[in-house]
Amino acid sequence: MSKIKKISWLESISVYKDIRMLRILLLGAISGFPWVLIASSLSLWLKEEGLSRSTIGWAGLIFGVYAFNYLWAPIIDRIQIPFLTKKLGHRRGWIVLMQLVILLSLLVWSIINPTENLALIITVGLIIAIASATQDITVDALRIEQINENEGKSMAAGAAMAVVGWWTGYKLGGVVALFTAEFLENIGIQDYWQATFLILGVLIILMNIALMFVHEPVETDRQSKQKETDNLIKGKLGSSNIITTFVAYITGTIGGPIISFFKKNGFAIAAGILGFVFLFKIGEAFMGRMSIVFYKEIGFSKGQIAIYSKGLGWITTVVFTLIGGIMAMRAGTIKTMFFAGGLMAITNLLFAVLAWTGKSELLFAIAVIADDITAAFATVAFVAFISLLVDRTYTATQYALLASIGTAGRTTLASSSGALVDWLNGDWGTFFVLTTIMVIPSLIFLWMIKNKIKIGAK
Image 1 (cartoon, rainbow, N blue to C red):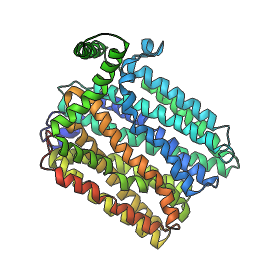
Image 2 (cartoon, one colour):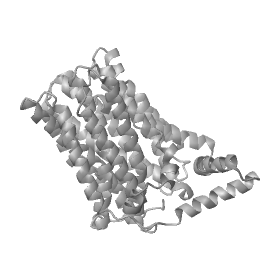
Image 3 (cartoon, rainbow, N blue to C red):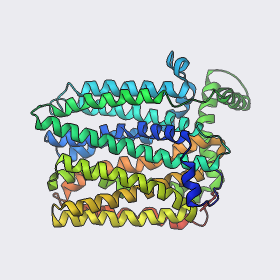
Image 4 (cartoon, rainbow, N blue to C red):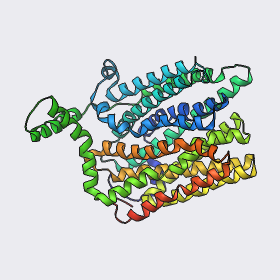
């Protein structure tokens, strides 16, 4: 990523008038919506069916697939989908295929009972997570390809719009899910969550219709260049057969980016970077995984959760994501990362206060707004940070790898969040204090490497 010069607020805002920003916004929403299904909706569904906090927390292990989508990213880049690729294009073909998988999964959820078929519920959730993680590979590629390589300002604006789009899909999708479930419950429908999933399936269909307005650029020589790299490596191996072809593929698509990353930064700094990326959002993830369970236990209704956590949160996230993007460009990425880390710690303490004082709509609103402001700054800074780190020779692959490592930290460790609350005997206040402390290790890593990182702008 090239160094972005400081620009005025007015110039920054004018970039968003580009029609391509609306397309990127839609792609972000498509990427964020599946999290409504396997995060908020699934967690609350299991909670209202009487399952334990530990079970809900461990069910979150399905998010772990997002940490490994880097491994099959090269395959998604190469394999074309029969019929869909020809009709829709390589990128859009893959997105539509994954959307169909998610839609079919919702149909399965709509006809089963979680208390009697918990294993099947989690398995279907895993399928949705795999489809979503696979879709993200293509969504990111199509988003980047909307902007020409030399359009620095538009690329930065596109990154911010992608984050806004993701939160739009997640937040507004959550509003629809929660209000629909509450409405169906109030009118007496017993399996109200199952019916809700059918309605959410309609949203998926609408997203696919809107996807047709996102132009896919003309096919490049990407495939021919991939073959050139494979042939070069096979030449080094000294022979040409099935084994050397496989070795060349693995080396070229996975080994090359990793070697490049460590060579560019040096082992110590590279290890520090990976440590920071892995740990940065651990505390936020622990809190986020259990937040909707906490809201329910403290006495808030689905409607209140929808208004404060989803609806109001969406507005806050959109505004402060755009502000956070401008701050990252003007103050520097590293300073913004430290700022976001400090906000995370303070926000988690607000939830501890809410737990200790009891149900309060005012304090709930303040805590949720603060949490969304924090998430906006942290996400924009994090995306900018790892974007600056990648080698342009392996931009997509290294970005996927770093993003996957960050996801691994949030999903694997945070899966024990429910068990931690149970171990604390439901002491939510202490739980949120512990999530505050979890922020510190990542900031220590960042402090150790802040003056040695080789990026275009700090």
